Image (cartoon, rainbow, N blue to C red):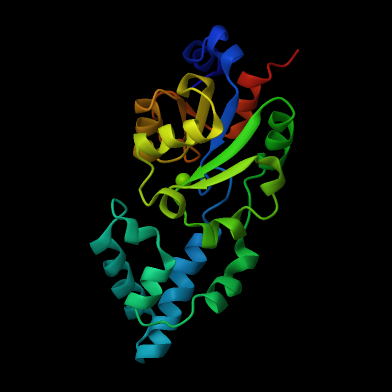
Amino acid sequence: MDLRSLAMIISLFQMKQIELISFDAEGTVVTPDFSQAIWHEAIPALYAQKNGLDLALAKSRIREEYDTIGDQRLEWYDIEYWFNYLGLGSSEPVIESCLSKIAYYPEVTEVLASLAREYRLIVASGTPTELLSFLLRDIEPYFVRVFSSVSHYEQLKSPNFYLKICEEMGVKPGQVIHVGDNWQFDFLNARQAGITAFYIDRLGRNHQESLSDLTQLKSLLIPPI
Ligand SMILES: [Mg+2]
């Protein structure tokens, strides 16, 4: 969507009221590389090794296990649940082996640095803190708070989660913008809480009211002179 249409969604009046900008983590500021490495490479490799299985077979079996739980249940996000369930021992060495894969989208640091000068920024993620603290390690200084729905509120990113964040940050939903790459958890649920939500569509799947990257958000909030 072009910037003029986006600007119409947040009217000038609303933009002046915005106090807090909330970011999803994975797929929004952090690339999927780390998650791909841990969930679809390292865990199946360890499972294959422990059970004397072929890697390809382990990968498909693990994928089936993930699908059985699905992303509407809390266990899906919980790395400790999976290590226990699959009998893989301690998750620490596996997490450590994937840390080099953590990467941010190219525009992220610059956009966060600019926005942090004008607004309070937070993270509102469904990733548990054990992983989130690693994922955000190089950009954490830009955020005044990091919220994990799973770790802090034992829930998915529901409308209630967003309301709790507003309460905790002392703002009304109308003073908040949230941006994320999950249509349900970032767009619909945040909007249901009364927050101005933007869907970030990095793959260009053409949802309405979507941003193609965070530079567009910056242009809306800090209009070029
Ligand atoms: Mg995401």
